[in-house]
Image (cartoon, rainbow, N blue to C red; front, side, top):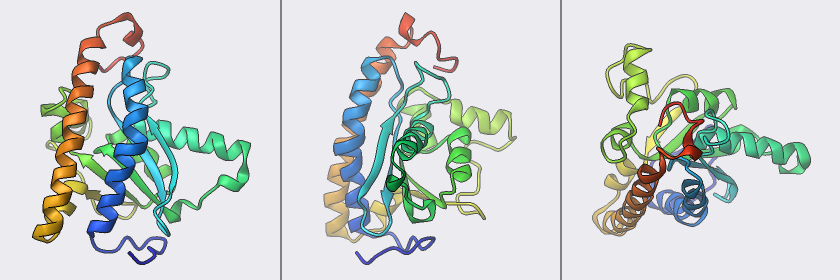
Length: 213
């Protein structure tokens, strides 16, 4: 894949999708496994350089410490803590691909925007969060607070463009689609295991500081 210039995400392509799946599998899921064992939700995030798709930082949900530490917010917060300790680690947000395992909620899409990122990619949709993982707050907030029907927000706007990895996989040719779909199925199965673990612990005392479970 050629270099992606800042602000130029280019068309969906299997090389980019494969790399984003790599990051979910190798970098985010291990963090999420540890986070779920502490009572946190299954949502994680990562930042990559557009230029070479190298990992900048990966993180997972930390709501047992602070209810604002959704995966995306935790990723941004931890990244800036690293930059504060070592300014050489700073990456221009215009040169960052922002990856979320689940479609960002209103808090997280706002955080991504305020952090200066012009994009985010997500694996699971809001509907998946509600239907497969029994966490429907994202869609409820959109409807109750912003008066949008479920899922009703502009995925392409003046601040960011949102990309569904599932849609990107479907856009690939048949051979590439089959290989990527098989990997996606494996990721989906792993998150179902993590979801069962989270659902079994969310009523425990360790989760008492999470208002919206």
